[in-house]
Amino acid sequence: MTKHNNIQNRIGETWLMISPFKISRIGLLVASVWGISSYAIYPLPSIAETPAKGGRCVPAIATGRVRCDYDSGDSYIGDFVNGLPGGTGVYIYSSGDRYEGQFRLGQPNGRGQFIFKDDARVEGIFRDGKISSGTALFTNGDRYVGPFSLDWKVGTPTGQGQFIFANGDRFVGQFLGGKPLGAGVFTRADGTRCSGQFFNQELDARGSCTFSNGIRYEGEFRKGLPHGKGTIIDTRGKRFPGVFKEGKRTER
Image (cartoon, rainbow, N blue to C red; front, side):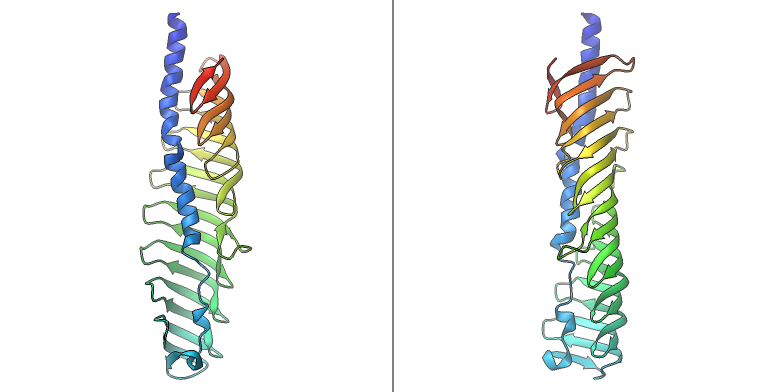
């Protein structure tokens, strides 16, 4: 009985280690990644305004270096080519956001960075006004590094990328439409490592976790916690299969 209780205690300790991996952390990942889209990084319908449509540029030239003020409250300083931003420049929105970098045909094309008024930013390579690859930096210190889809109205993390939390936790894996979907690995700063197939933004998954105390879990996850059928493997290799709910073993 004592041996059995010791095993249960160790498993209980492991659940305490798992708990911080719950939605509180993963929610930050998803909220932050989707936060990129909420900023509407498809700028510049107004950037295509010409002086005839309410813009005032100094000097009043079609090609060359200009400073422009638009009726919308936006401003631009940089190169013009045939009446549109082309080359390098800075476009400042009335909201306080701005884009700095390369332009072609009036839209961000090439290397640049979009800086939001709250100091979050996306920097990397832009194509036709959308971020295609680079880094999203958030005000809380989190960041996403990887490719972005160009098929959406705004650039959303899609493909093999990584999200690094300010506290040292890291998710590396497949993203689609801004959320984890496919193979991935979540590594915590304390050494806990969970890998498998992730199905949604809440990190419902099927896979395995190895904890810093040597105990392992294999099976189903929901919201980052063991949920469904799974097995605990202790440090001696002893297996304890069962049915789990919200991180707790409910059936043997």
